[in-house]
Length: 355
Image (cartoon, rainbow, N blue to C red; front, side, top):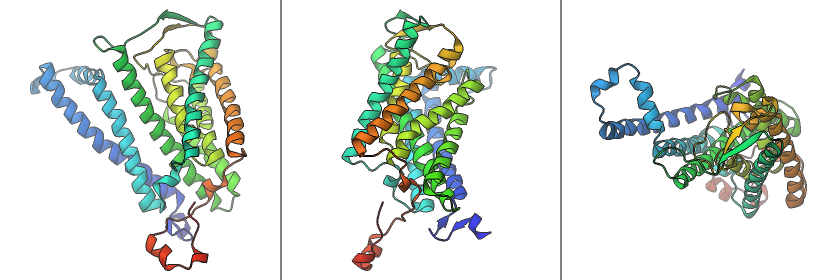
């Protein structure tokens, strides 16, 4: 029974409880930060919009008020930044308190090779989305209706693009940190502790975390069963770089530019959401099963083909840059965080290896 709650070998909570408390911390931090931002937004809108306290009780006010807040670029930017901050704080605290490991061990060891992986990921996301756009344009499935589309009236295109870029930088970091760095790693370690081989344990965690990633987007606007399944595949695509290298450089990089180029360069919906400002404004047509329709390319066969191509290019890159392209078993290996006093007191030959 004790094994269900406590990992005696690692002297820490069992996998399920680490994940539960880690994501619980995430929800708490996000709630606090966004409540502060929301309260500040209420004050600003009331001061600039001429609302009175009595107007809060009028029918339809809540939707009108929320729409006004969401139309403010600074508000949407603060929501994204606060989510990033809350995620980093949650994983840092969870890592120390529940996982007993360093924050860098969640795939963020910022060495030169990490930055090389990150640059490759950035380039890959842009190239794959350009491939999708080019194929759809050649097939006559998209029509360019305007070269530019501002996010909204009164907001310059450059400002809209900057806000979107920062938002997708935040999204790329916190979604990969949570889904791959924290969830996949804990799943891999947990299944390995059940006696499963490290590689198989990582593969199980890889599949489960990808399923969760797809389900996280199941309530997005215009979502369908096809889009949810495709986003589970997207979880595999985004997580491949992590299971091959043990680092999040490729995953974060490709996630950032995949979203930004999809929505703000080529004008597609991003997971069912309109991104506002776009360098190219398009009219979508063609068979929905191929294009993804109102959800965007991620829900279509064209998106699956691009992800497949991306996976192949990742494997080739990792093999060339890292020397091999296999599952990184270190993801399922737990090396406890060692205090400096413990290291100093231990014989040199017996010092535990920090992975």
